[in-house]
Image (cartoon, rainbow, N blue to C red):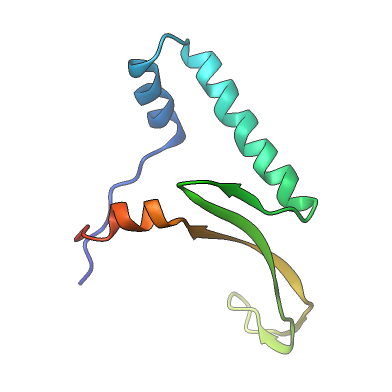
Length: 102
């Protein structure tokens, strides 16, 4: 059975960063929210977001299906082709977590 992993929230990230730099939590929160908004905007515009040393965010098209099932109701529905956001870790990130055991 897999061990449940601990979560790190955005609020905790803001707290951690505030301990290492001379910025207010409000300013750090603004920068983080702005960063996420910019990534989201770029993806919606069809752009790939490459963060060297970390990874790449991009949109891939998932093929639709004529017959899919709504898991809640059991109803048969048609699903159109649609975009999904994906993240590919970069080499440095892959190397950093290679030996992590859960």
